[in-house]
Amino acid sequence: MLFVAASQTSSPPSALAWTFAFVEGELLVPEGDIGTLQPATVESWSTDAPCRHYLGTLSSVDCWALSLREAPPGWRRMPLRAAMMALDPALGAIAGRAAQVLEWDRTHRFCGVCGTPTAIKPGERARECPACRHTAYPRLSPAMMCLVWRPGELLLARSPHFAPGRYSALAGFVEPGESLEDCLHREVAEEVGVTVRDLRYYGSQSWPFPHSLMVAFTARWTDGEIVPQAGEIEDARWFALDALPDIPPRFSISGHLILDTLEQMRANERQE
Image (cartoon, rainbow, N blue to C red; front, side, top):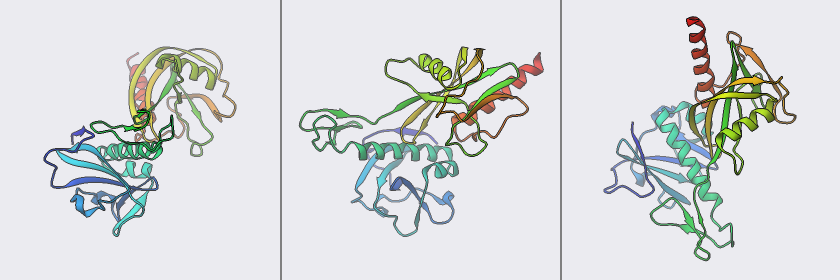
């Protein structure tokens, strides 16, 4: 399914539409099987929703984000992360986009410069202050992810908020004035006290909790013993390729990064 992003409605509008509706940050899904989510007529949803945003088209079908006060009959609330894991990947990604757009709209109703109520700016995804003309676009927070490796081993760490026993790659937000590479070197040094080289870009993922953009790399260990950062890293250690701990599922880029790197390292070992 091909998604084409847009902030203005299509012309003519599609007869049916995908509607991603939220109540207090949770996605509304059909009662029973979430797999029964299907496009419906826009009129089947409240047209006086507190907040409505056009998202674009999925296979030529319009997509909308709505914020509602309560779930209508036949629908139930579901945490976004759980819903994204259960939905078709294309629908899950649009649900994440919808959540970010609605959160941006909710947090920018007033100008951050002068406090005046803002209004949607025609023609683009932005809210503009009618008094001082300050424009607020949807916020994105780039975060680096780094999987450190050395022959036969991966360096994995766990944060205090992880599920019990789960480990993952290192990650942290980019600071003002930093390049992605600068951030990666700083975060690795801060979180586990080692240095790295041979940075290789792996991929990126929009992460709507609430508005991150995860940018993933692998890097080869150069020097240093692991020293977990107090208050940030509960534990960090080297794991042999055949003895990895519980890691994130492939739903998140961290799961893809670890599993794909593991497969590549094993393939390289077989060729040696």
